[in-house]
Image 1 (cartoon, one colour):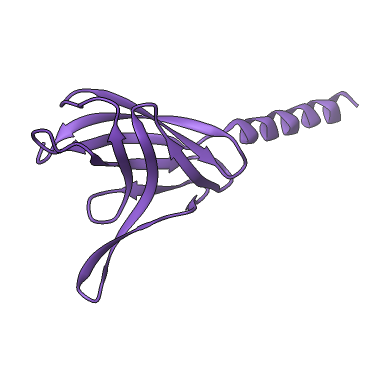
Image 2 (image 1 turned 90 degrees about the horizontal axis):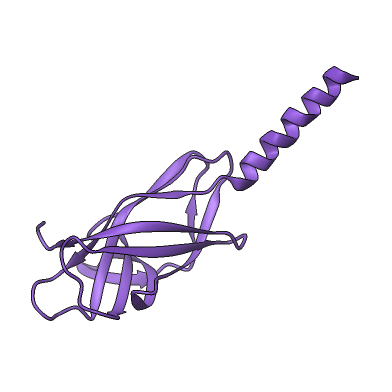
Length: 143
């Protein structure tokens, strides 16, 4: 009986760990143009999901911006177009990459002018209601 209780304890601890497992932002950065043109910025980086189950990002927000949304840039008939992404699946033990000219964060109307070296927190909400935070460092274009 003691052995089966020990096995049960390990199984329960493992399922609790899986439930607590969260994706994480790696190498997050925000591209800021020179001068006063800061009404619309873009955020990049990598979201890694080292968890045993997939996660789906459904929203993003930050106290530093009036609006944060997920966008994808694609080439359609030779024209670059940006479209909002309603849901962003991240595979179990997988990752998604935010990079210029592809998937990115659209950051609208910053509350204050940002400069190189500033850090901005962005919160991501998962489909199951949980949230995780990423740190994004501000870089100048070309920096």
